[in-house]
Image 1 (tube, rainbow, N blue to C red):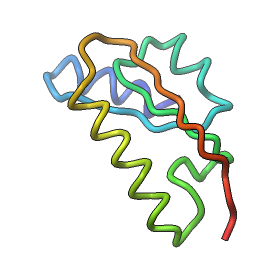
Image 2 (tube, one colour):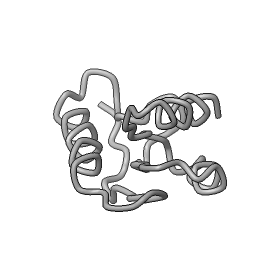
Image 3 (tube, rainbow, N blue to C red):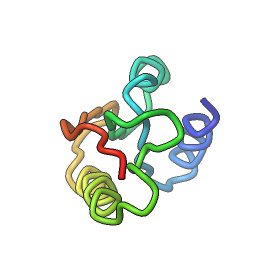
Image 4 (cartoon, one colour):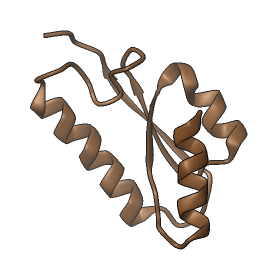
Length: 87
């Protein structure tokens, strides 16, 4: 999970990160000890939702930004309950 390695490196350089991943990789994020992770119930390759579904994209990015602002410790994983709805 290269995005996880990049996030960890960015964090060591002082750049806070939030990783958005699909549910099937939740265990990887937990094993890697990523600092802040948003998990979606979307399929692989679509962590933000269906192409062109701007409202879903906004909700996922909004959740990531909220987590970035509110996380008080490392290793926080939140899972969004919204199922994938193809357009």
